[in-house]
Length: 169
Image (cartoon, rainbow, N blue to C red; front, side):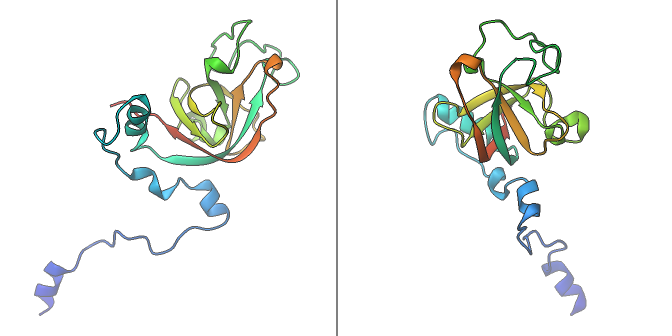
C-alpha cells in the first residue's frame, strides 16, 4: 500500500501556497511573467516585442525623468555609468535609461548595462524599449530614470510602471 502511493504522489508541490502581499509583493517579480505568447497570434513589430519579453521577469518600479545637467548628475553630465557619451542634441527619442542599483547585476540585480528593457505604464508616448546606460544614486530602490532633454519639459513621477528585459533568442 505504501509503495503504490509513493508512485502516484508527486514529490514536489508546484503550486504556490501563499500570495505575497505588501512590501514582499512590491519587491518580487510579477507572477504572470512566465506566460508564453505565441508569435503566430499577432503580426507586426508589437507582437515581436511581446514574444521576445514573454519569458523574462517583470518588475514594478517608480519611473522618473532626468536631464544631463550637473544639478541632476555628477560633474560629467554627458558621460553615463557605462561610459557612453550623450550627444549635445539628445532627447527622449534616443530611449536611454538609468536603473537603481538594486536592479543592476553589479549590485545583485538582473539587468546589465546595454540590456534592452520593455517599459509599460508611463504614457503612450514614452512606453517602449529602452537601453540601460546609467545608474541612479544609491538612495533609490526599485526606480528607473528616463533620459530627457530640458526643452522637452517632462515632469514624470509614475509609480507602478512595469519593466521587463527583452530576451533575444
